[in-house]
Every structure is written in structure tokens, then in C-alpha cells.
Image (cartoon, rainbow, N blue to C red; front, side, top):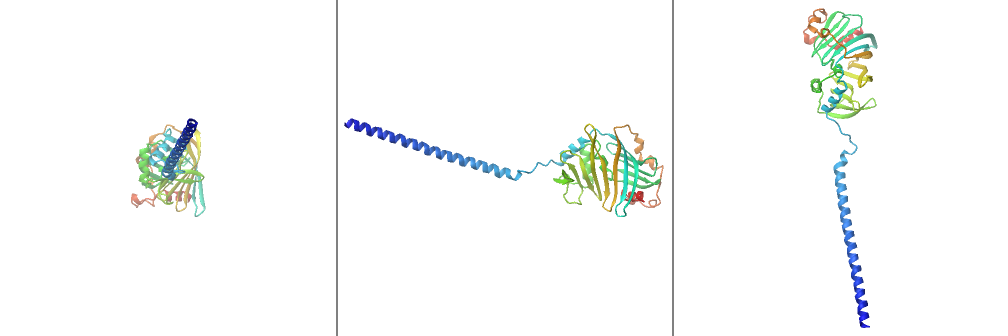
Length: 299
């Protein structure tokens, strides 16, 4: 009887010990689980704190990369011959003149435009940094000018050379932001102030949308893929802050035709025309610029 009682007591104590051990294990596991949960929560919190400021903010490319992607879009265009309709307007006087022009372009810096069938009526030549403008058979501008830079955005260019030219007209290449322009998301290269020099480039297509410098605004639109992987704006609006504006609408375009370099020979062409009476007594630095030439064409 005593053996049975001792056995029962031993069994009872063993069961209690096992139960106590199980309880200790469960408590330990709960402690570990809580500790692990706290660790995971802390890790998640740390990741959230680090990444939260950037959630929802897109990565903005540097200007060097944007310009490189943009120049790649026109990398196959080395020469161009364009037939366009030009509308010269004075918005303040509600005056307008329409005429056809032929444009010749050669990368990296040659440009010539003339009115179809009217030699010397309106002739513009740009070679390197120099521009010669002739109206009604007389030279009205002969000097350095960046007024035609917008045309060279649309030709094969070295990204480095183009970047230097953009800096030359006052665009701060260190400043890049995102903006919305005519329903498109665009990279804005330059200061954000409305009046500051700037270049807007479509974020998805990397095509220039707007160029602003000095008192000039150039708006590129109606881009068309006129041959495989080759785009061009079939409408360009070149305007001055004083209300003088020219609108160019492409009617025909030929890519990479052979072009005679003598078309851009400013010294030779200069000898064929006299200086207008308005400019004959003025130093070259004061000869009027493109906005006055546009006004004269309207009149």
C-alpha cells in the first residue's frame, strides 16, 4: 500500500514537473516570438523611415542624359531640305503675311532659308555663330546670333557641343525638374521661373517641346514619324515677347539630301547685296536683329 502511494505521488510529481517544463517552454517561445516580432516591427519602421520620402517621387535624369537621349532621336538627320509655309504676324497690330520658304540645314551649324521664287526678298544664312539676314535685296543683319539654335536641336549633334550651346544662351544645366506642358509630362532644364532660359523635353519621347532664351520663345509641336524612327515637328512657332511671331508649317521634308556648301558661304553672298540704308551708317553690333526683320516682312 505504501509502495502504491509512493508510486502515485512520484507519478503526480513527474506529471507536474513535465507540465511546468511545458509551461516554461511556452513562455519562452512567447517571449522569443514577441522579441522577434518587435525586431521585425523595428526593421520595417526603419525601412519605412528611410524610404518614405522617396515613395511616389519619380527618378529625375540629369541634364546630360536627357540631352544625350534627345540628340539620339535626331542622330540620323545630317542634312535636311524643308518646304514650309511661313506666317509672319504682329499680334498687337493683327497683321499677318503668309509665304512659302525653302530651308536647307546641315549638321552641326549650317542653315539657309529663302522665299520660293523670290531671290533676295528674304534670305537668312547661318554659318557657325554668324547670321546674315537679307530683306528686299539689302543686308539688314550681319553678326553673331543664337537666334537659330532651335533649328540645330533637330539635327544630328554631339551632346557635348549642344550642351555648351545651351549654356551659352543662359540655360542652367544643373537644374532639372518635372513639369506639365500641354498635357505632357516634361523635363524642365533650367530655372523654374517663367521668364528664365529653359528647355522642355518630353519625358517619354525625349523630343524638345519648348526653348526659351533672351526674349525668344520657340514652341515645337505636331511631331510626326515621317519615316521609321525619324521624328520632326511639323509646326514650330517662333515668337518674341513684344508680340512679333512666326509660325512654320512643314509641307515637305527630305532627309539627308546632298547640299552644296556654297549655299552657306556668308563672305561670298555678302558681296552680292548692299547694306540697307537703315543700317549703312551703324556699327555691326547695332544692326537690327531678327525681330525687326520679321516686322519688316509683315509690313
